[in-house]
Length: 291
Image (cartoon, rainbow, N blue to C red; front, side, top):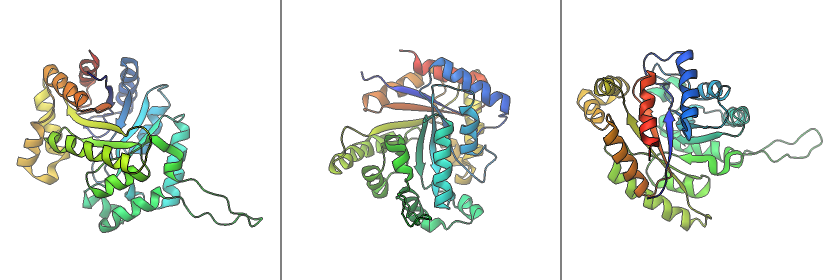
């Protein structure tokens, strides 16, 4: 079976996280061998802001990749400022940044940021393209870099549709799949489309395929999973949130089975998103890293 990298989500979107817990979590996950530390992105939710969180974590880690999975980029609608922020974060993380981006589906986040929800795809394309640079004092035009220029293969895309395929073929290094919420069949089918689009675009090599799942560990694993999913996905209604909670990996055997299935499907990395901030949740990482 193909070997697979295993990354760990930061507890930035779960109840009870503190600076001390976040820093300890990041250090321990890196010491345990996590391939990436991952931060999700929301605005109208009591979570930590994604890019600031990764900047903080970068100062206490040395080797592990730091990943957004995924950053709702159009919420940062000032393209020049967004590019500056990404370049700064990439430099501060010593080029360990892996930028997973998407357009999201929470209209309340867009409303809060004063960004038109219906324009989110066009905004993302503007953020990715090479900016037009004004002439300098001597009249010369300096060619500014785009986010894609800066990150290269470290730019990944979330989503599942024609626009995602187009962006991966043109700009990105691969795809991030939300595979752990009952969508495994559609995720594996779309992974084939990603590979085909990559080949059709004449890209060398193969796209990087990353799968995200939710995990919960410890004596109250199921209860923690229910509490978090009911909170984070409350906008979908109680019944749907409870159904999503049923897909959280809450036992070592279940997690190993999912990991092996994802590896057999040709994915390169598995990301474990926690449902609580207690350090016992890192046992999910230990389980997934065990051959």
